[in-house]
Image (tube, rainbow, N blue to C red; front, side):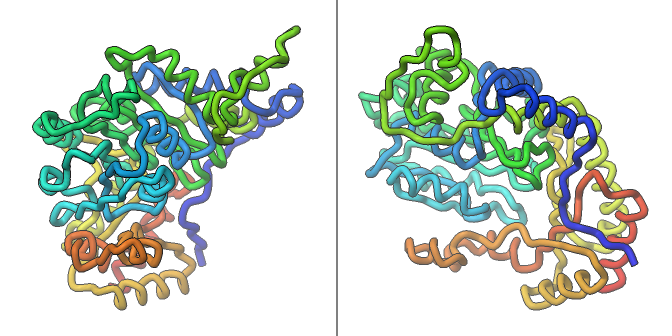
Length: 399
């Protein structure tokens, strides 16, 4: 019987050889490979600036801190996401505001945003669930319509430069996705990516923040400050300190430790060289699944259309007529046939930490309806066509 894992990393000898090269080089922490990886990400996304970090979570949190978001401020995100998106808001002391998903969608309900934005709102974090990009043009239009009530912190140059609520895209799933032929990485004011082990492109652990040049801001200095804050607030990284006579440094803030080392960046460089082929294969797998499930009346997330193309990160499948019990029974029966599946996501208001913050799932009916009959099937580039059809046919036979 076949054994179908959910999302193993696609690692070849090319990545392994690069890791060996870095290990033998004598320089394994943040250095030239990390800088090279940042440059390649900028080229791939068409953005002006990239800073690699240890996670997408760190990328979002550092961005909030660069924006000066703090206690008394509010940040809006979706109820349908992983905890990382929301946790960073609480880390900086701001009030977390959750929006429902749009009816029949895994993505944030743009129509609800207008009523959630007030003079305390400093940022919105839309989430590209499954690698499908939110309608960030619609979000930007709503933000612009609220510009007159925005109250920037006069001590924060970024808030003053934007003069409106800032969009920080949680594109942990979205590297390579596009909307209106614009790649994720350029659509929002800032975009955070993840290179975690289960992501399309992995560095084992890792993330990045990207942005295009912001008018009225020294963007090179902003990039430098992201690096400084990712290394304890130290004005020189270890590679700079190794230059002749360059040991001395300053600490300008009691900051954080969330840099990406070269040994991981080397993996990312090789992954990025193969990434176009990996994306193409993911969409091929999606087409095979769709060919079975759409005629059955099931409801997979649609990954491409006239104005968008996802990164093909997750195959989210809703089964009409199922509730959570039947869905969970299906997951168990598939596991008995050695097919590992998952659920993306249990909405935040259903989790203890967010219940304790006062959130109630009854206030997010659309998110709950997406969750209650959703199952996420294996979607990764180590699957053969035969594997995909085995999964599809097994699901079909069981439901």
